[in-house]
Amino acid sequence: MNKILFRGLILVLSIFAVYQGLKEVPWTKWFGIDEKYIEIEQEVGDALWHLIESSETISTDTQNIKVVDSIVNQIVIRNKLQNIRFFPHVIDNLQVNAFALPGGHLVVHTALIEKVETQEQLAGVIAHELSHITERHISKKLLKEFGVAILTGATGGGEGARKVLTFISSRAYDRTLESEADMQAIEFLYNAQINPLGLAQFMEIMSESDLPNELDWISTHPSSEERAQNIKNRVDELPIKVYKDLNI
Ligand SMILES: [Zn+2]
Image 1: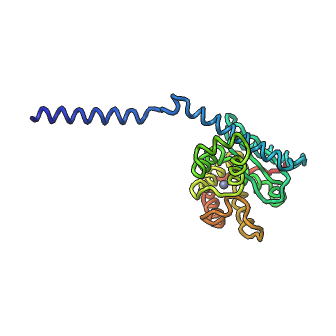
Image 2: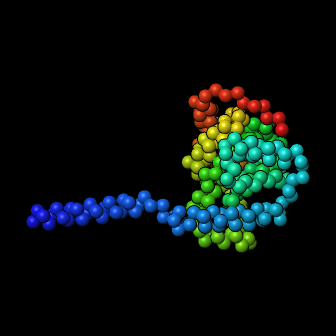
Image 3: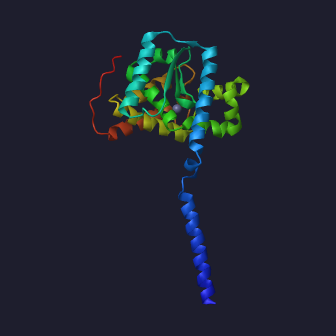
């Protein structure tokens, strides 16, 4: 009897060990699911950008384009992000806004460039949006809201794509993703030798503004004041660094 119990125990333990082992196997990688998913993301992002391109005015202001490109390049190079493709776009739009699309597209409105008081503040917003791209937050947000069906449907353009676009450009991410993007942005800026306090300053400016809160992360909880404080606290923990003077 004891022998049978012992064998039973061994069997259970073996099954458990195999199960644990299987959990560790990178199945998604083996079956190429990640690669396929990245491809879909790129297609969705491209389709959404084409929709914007066909309905908005692309900025021809060479200085604005140069500033945005330069900030993105500095962050990418100093954080070794060259393996990710980024497509920065500047559009003439009166709403103070910037947002990321799937597939590395970053859209910056000219009103945001005019609203910031320093290039460090703009760099803060750009770093925050780039973080949504590198952390794959956009897909998480879309999948949560729409599911896979509409996401793949969006590649065809039309109503599905428009719905997705409105959602991406006007709605907040959840609180956890916003905090994650703030913290990642600080790291990106710090490594690029750009003062990360610009992000906190811009949040403070927007929280005092009479304008409707158009930037995704302004309307979220915790409040922008609280987030500005969290950013300052994090920056205080970092080793002191001499930041460069952005003068693009
Ligand atoms: Zn955000």
